[in-house]
Length: 113
Length: 113
Image (spheres, each protein chain N blue to C red):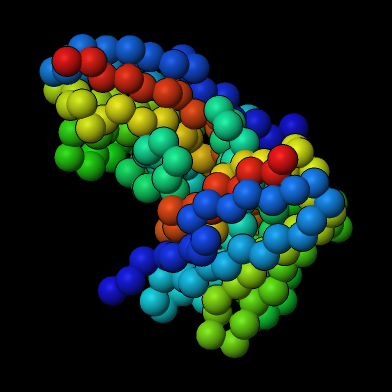
């Protein structure tokens, strides 16, 4: 049973560019959440997708957008990259409720130069 | 304001020794509290989830306690191993129809031989 997978593992982009990160949830999970984790900090909630709709959103600008596909996989898009967007981006999947345990993927390390 | 604070920020112990990490939260309403272990550059892995009515929960050499009255939790690691070197993150799920996960910044544990 595959756990949460994310791609790519590492990514280097230039300021102003756009990036797309991908996540496949754990088998049987239908809810995907995205987090940004700066070095030495705890994860910060970006948004959560359920039934292909954004259900909740954290305090992130509109440059951060997402999508969930019918197979529950998800994408995180970031436009007009800033140096401060450099971070580990984590995807977590769960059943339809935050009360259930969240399973995290290995993350995508984004470096903006 | 909902907050989760962890102490100490970092900790160095010798292999074989025990240690205790602390988590204080001001989250209301409270739903559950989770401890995660995060290896450097990897996604967090769940250790325990505790609800309001649970005082203690163990997972191998990891034992978490919860005092809902004082809003404090601790994670005790017994007979530490080199592989315990990681960040340990305390996360509280707030209750309500749209619960939010509030993350602490983590305690970075280094186990030395």
